[in-house]
Length: 323
Image (tube, rainbow, N blue to C red; front, side, top):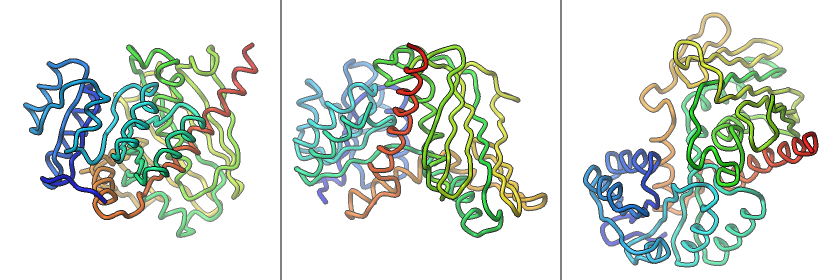
């Protein structure tokens, strides 16, 4: 794998919240990473450089991704721009890290994967929920057999969230609440150690791609059924505390949806990884490992594609129900 003269050169494209969050963690925990920043507005980019060091790359983004110091381009712009920027970066010989939702449909995945294969570069998807300590702990419990045969997965992910800017535009975000933030939970349900066979979604009071609330139902090959209730318009208990459960023929799990705690049965209480509850540090560490060693990532582009295709399938069915 390639590496810049001063370490692994990562160009962050975009200057919003996600850009700052990833820059902070990379600057704090990865001394072998050299950060560069590009954004449409000069002031927020200069602020990022002032906070986290690194360099501002000027010009258009098409020029920025070709900078010879750059080994990987980290795309944090709205989803409708991801495919174009990713392909340009790959054609410039750079690896790509892209925020979720990575691409809008399977056609965009086809385009990006073809470019990555042609140029011999990697595409990594920044889905931090796959790196949550909570998910690792749940997966270990399921695989151990302590729950017996899993029958029900019930995820509570309701909250009140203001969606504005591109997040309020389905054409730019790729959809509504399910696509823009529910994608986290679809990926979570897909990675429990069970294999999703099919999915269906119900959209209260709004058609697919414009929803602010959704019930997403999956069937697993192993016989279990999973239900996700996700919303941007329902206030959570105690400013965000949400309880989810997994039921098996021998026992059950109760967990705080964000990852605060996990209760196995009635007695085994654990707090899996409070220092990295959202999984961002583990995710970025995995990305740096992949780009410096050539190893496989824990969350692959095939995993990301499968989650998008599940959502797109339910959106298609939803449109048929709302002519």
